[in-house]
Image 1 (cartoon, rainbow, N blue to C red):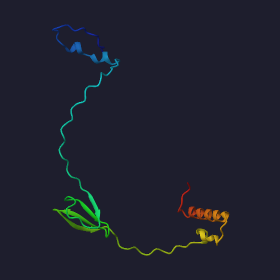
Image 2 (image 1 turned 30 degrees about the vertical axis):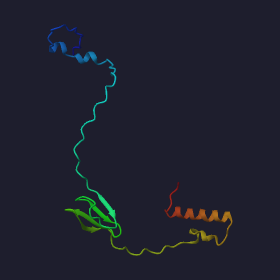
Image 3 (image 1 turned 180 degrees about the vertical axis):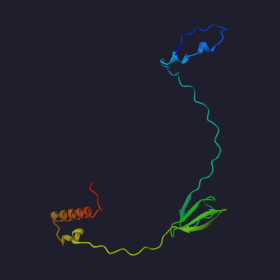
Image 4 (image 1 turned 135 degrees about the vertical axis):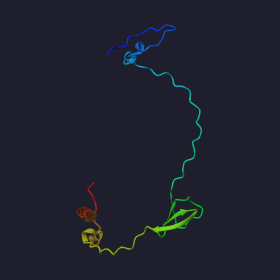
Length: 146
């Protein structure tokens, strides 16, 4: 591959392929220093208005004028969901599930309760009871090691 050789241009000289071939080879090791920053340009024209996005509204009273068609509303006191269609809110469902079964009663032994002190007020007894409680919670997976 031929490398570029500097050419001194003269007035009225015709630019040819041969004279320009490999010109980039002659500038690969030149470090260009940027010039000073130019003046700040004028502020551009405002852009066109974007399409309104869909949103969620929340409350306990179904709104009248709030929202746009396609918006959703969650009535937080009963979990009914409404959608605004043609300017009015229409109920489309409810997100609250049925009541689940009652859970089993918890079993708590004396080591899990501060009342295991049985009225003792000594600092050592409180510390021991508290440490026992923490160890029990960690053993049962309710508390992680720090």
